[in-house]
Amino acid sequence: MEFSLPSVKFVCSGCGATIHTILEEVPPYDLMADRESDAQGFVEQAVECTECDRQFRVGIRNTGAGLAAVLEDENTPVEVINDPIASPDDEWGTEAYQRENLPNDPGQIFKFATYDIDFVASEVESGGHGSIAALNRMLLVQYFSAIEAYLSDRLIRLVLDDPKSMSALVRGNKEWAAEKISVVELASNPDAFRDWVHTRLRELMYHNFVKIDQYYRSALGSTIFPDEATKKILMEFVPVRHDCVHRYGRDHDGRERTISKADLDKLGSALENMVAHLEGLFVRRGTNG
Image 1: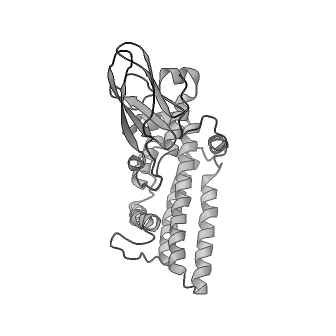
Image 2: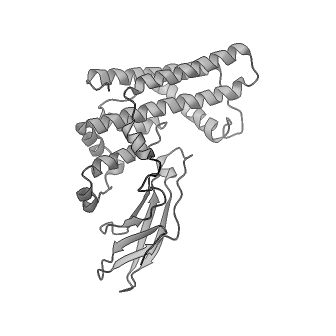
């Protein structure tokens, strides 16, 4: 029997028959969620073995990079067929491009990005345009985009280039403790473990500084925050970023967020302190690339 629609396949633990059934629903992935746990959609589907009538419940999770399926007993491997989320052919080569084109110097890229933000903010402020408030909100979000790209690129390069850092990250990550990679996948792909870690790191929300700090503590052995004062400033701007992205610049009471050039300078300085702190750590450990 051929299935062109998304489906799951596994072996019945009762009679050994192969069960292959079409998915009734593909869970969504919320790109706008602030937490990875909220972004990943999850559904359950009841499945019956046609040979012995044994009942199963299959959980399907959308990780953002693909669908992951698991049975209640978690001992029987479940294969996802025709995954609509992760195309195995990667028609546009985007996964390979991202993997093979990580920047050699994320710190320099961050400097270029923040220089442009400061330049635009200064030009608008001196011109006295009426759209300063809206533009400043956009620039604040851009600051976060720059630091998210930096934190992501630095962490991914670190663990992909240093097996010890990758091992430390995985061992120190409680969220991954129950995750499994099938023996079949490991046998068919020598880089399966490395690819699995890479995928999980790409899924993270890098503006969640507290969570990302734990990842860096495990992999790099240091916090991302240079000091408590910098941490406090950055944490104060996290909800502002949320409102600018998700509420069009309004807080939960509907009040407009007012962001000045001074606010942008304060955020920019704090982010630059964070990057300088991390870059110093990479230089000292001899992994500047």
